[in-house]
Image (tube, rainbow, N blue to C red; front, side, top):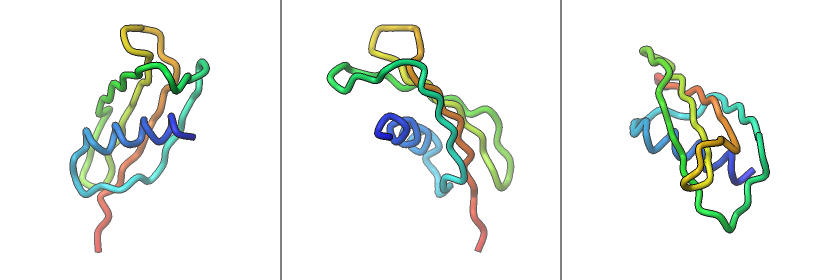
Length: 79
Protein backbone atom coordinates (compact mmCIF):
# COMPACT_ATOMS: atom_id res chain seq x y z
CA UNK A 1 0.00 0.00 0.00
CA UNK A 2 2.75 2.51 0.79
CA UNK A 3 4.20 2.31 -2.72
CA UNK A 4 0.76 3.09 -4.21
CA UNK A 5 0.55 6.03 -1.80
CA UNK A 6 3.96 7.26 -2.99
CA UNK A 7 2.81 7.13 -6.61
CA UNK A 8 -0.39 9.03 -5.79
CA UNK A 9 1.56 11.65 -3.80
CA UNK A 10 3.84 12.10 -6.82
CA UNK A 11 0.83 12.67 -9.08
CA UNK A 12 -0.74 15.14 -6.64
CA UNK A 13 2.53 17.05 -6.28
CA UNK A 14 2.91 17.30 -10.06
CA UNK A 15 -0.73 18.36 -10.53
CA UNK A 16 -0.25 21.10 -7.96
CA UNK A 17 -3.89 22.19 -7.97
CA UNK A 18 -7.09 21.67 -6.06
CA UNK A 19 -7.90 18.42 -7.85
CA UNK A 20 -8.84 15.41 -5.74
CA UNK A 21 -8.21 11.74 -6.53
CA UNK A 22 -11.12 10.03 -8.24
CA UNK A 23 -9.44 6.70 -9.00
CA UNK A 24 -6.08 4.97 -8.76
CA UNK A 25 -5.04 1.73 -10.44
CA UNK A 26 -1.66 0.31 -9.46
CA UNK A 27 0.26 -2.59 -10.98
CA UNK A 28 3.06 -4.08 -8.89
CA UNK A 29 5.68 -5.54 -11.23
CA UNK A 30 8.43 -6.45 -8.74
CA UNK A 31 8.97 -6.33 -4.98
CA UNK A 32 9.42 -2.82 -3.62
CA UNK A 33 12.17 -2.90 -1.02
CA UNK A 34 11.82 -0.03 1.48
CA UNK A 35 15.56 0.24 2.20
CA UNK A 36 16.39 1.16 -1.42
CA UNK A 37 16.12 4.70 -2.81
CA UNK A 38 13.26 5.14 -5.25
CA UNK A 39 12.43 7.49 -8.13
CA UNK A 40 8.99 8.48 -9.38
CA UNK A 41 8.32 9.67 -12.93
CA UNK A 42 4.95 11.38 -13.41
CA UNK A 43 3.33 12.30 -16.73
CA UNK A 44 0.01 13.95 -17.49
CA UNK A 45 -1.71 11.83 -20.12
CA UNK A 46 -4.60 14.21 -20.77
CA UNK A 47 -6.63 16.84 -19.03
CA UNK A 48 -9.95 18.51 -19.50
CA UNK A 49 -12.15 20.89 -17.59
CA UNK A 50 -13.31 18.36 -14.98
CA UNK A 51 -10.85 15.46 -15.10
CA UNK A 52 -7.14 14.91 -15.61
CA UNK A 53 -5.48 11.58 -16.33
CA UNK A 54 -2.01 10.75 -15.03
CA UNK A 55 0.57 7.98 -15.28
CA UNK A 56 3.27 7.37 -12.68
CA UNK A 57 6.20 4.96 -12.71
CA UNK A 58 8.18 3.83 -9.68
CA UNK A 59 11.76 2.63 -10.20
CA UNK A 60 14.75 1.96 -7.99
CA UNK A 61 17.19 4.89 -8.19
CA UNK A 62 19.47 4.55 -11.20
CA UNK A 63 17.49 1.67 -12.73
CA UNK A 64 15.31 1.76 -15.84
CA UNK A 65 13.02 -1.22 -15.12
CA UNK A 66 9.77 -0.14 -13.45
CA UNK A 67 8.76 -1.87 -10.24
CA UNK A 68 5.27 -0.32 -10.05
CA UNK A 69 2.99 1.55 -12.44
CA UNK A 70 -0.06 3.64 -11.63
CA UNK A 71 -2.81 5.38 -13.52
CA UNK A 72 -4.67 8.10 -11.64
CA UNK A 73 -7.70 10.18 -12.44
CA UNK A 74 -8.01 13.52 -10.65
CA UNK A 75 -11.29 15.42 -10.49
CA UNK A 76 -11.83 19.14 -10.31
CA UNK A 77 -14.92 19.08 -8.13
CA UNK A 78 -17.49 21.82 -8.54
CA UNK A 79 -19.58 23.14 -5.71
